[in-house]
Length: 398
Ligand SMILES: Cc1cc2nc3c(=O)[nH]c(=O)nc-3n(C[C@H](O)[C@H](O)[C@H](O)COP(=O)(O)OP(=O)(O)OC[C@H]3O[C@@H](n4cnc5c(N)ncnc54)[C@H](O)[C@@H]3O)c2cc1C
Image (tube, rainbow, N blue to C red; front, side, top):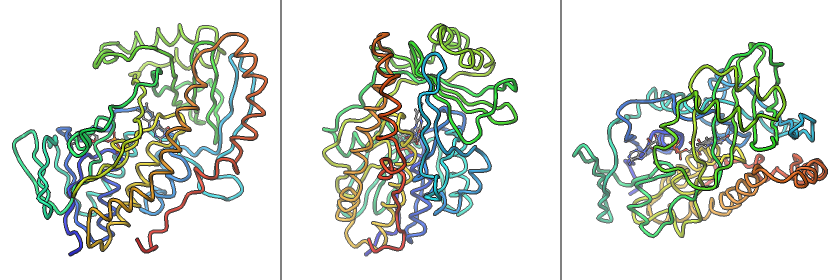
């Protein structure tokens, strides 16, 4: 018998997208989320790459989300004096795909969740997964509030610190701290020149900075700063936005004026996160349970691909489960289809992140000299086509 009911754990990016694709595959999903209510204000913004936007298109949500964000066709890379080192164009060039989308992480999550709710998919909040029981035919999820739910399969979309991963795959490694923090916010400063269709990035003397400015003066920005030891849980939450702004002004003290003006203009909350990724897991599934998205293969944000990978997983897993007679086999097939791509991407993002670490004056000089050539070769649209020209054909047999 093909599966009829899936328990989806987590209502971030992968969860609602998976539920929507499962519905299309003829499988009812119910989404269980730990948070007591939707909270769409967590996280910074993200650049959803062309391959991720293609999945939104398949869900019929590309237009709705494009209206909430700004399109991005490439990046302008600068050194610590503001000199343009190189420009990189993404998959949108030459009509090879949609532009990538710069969007608040919470907005992406909200639009996906609302689309799923409109499609009649039930969401249950305040359901923190604690335990799973799998008798080979049915899987039962136990939640912190003492309730349970049963289904034919369970999909863990519960992110970096996934409880599902710990329960299904107790030997799996813990997330790895990458030595960088990410801070960022939204601000408004009409005196900053708009950056239509581009993100501007700066290899600062001590820290890395990126921003995009809309013609109406709305600016989204982030800074990656080096910190060797992993912050204790809750440590960054204890810093006020004012502390964060002062720290950033200090870190970017000798960087171009635009960088400091953007930070100084920020009056609202400044988010701060340690950046992690997840070392390779031996498996992503056991019995009737499987993990996807950050729960299976969290990547650092330096390749702008975490959300895109979660969306691709959602589509491909639902396609693989469509009509599947044997769930563990379908999970194994899904893992086979995905593993090579995501492993390559996590490694690529980790390498990119290393270039953001501060270096000596000699290191900076060499970077300014060689980076333009290196980017021309390694970041050209054809060199990056393995990332953004990836397509999933929903109609292909599983
Ligand atoms: C600072 C930062 C910048 C980023 N920049 C980019 C970018 O530029 N481009 C990009 O593509 N990606 C980026 N990402 C990554 C992207 O946000 C994630 O890869 C993406 O959100 C992964 O989706 P997910 O659904 O797997 O996990 P998440 O979005 O983390 O969702 C997990 C959900 O599960 C819930 N949950 C957790 N535990 C439980 C439990 N026990 N029971 C029930 N529910 C639970 C959580 O509350 C959450 O709602 C960035 C991430 C960060 C932190």
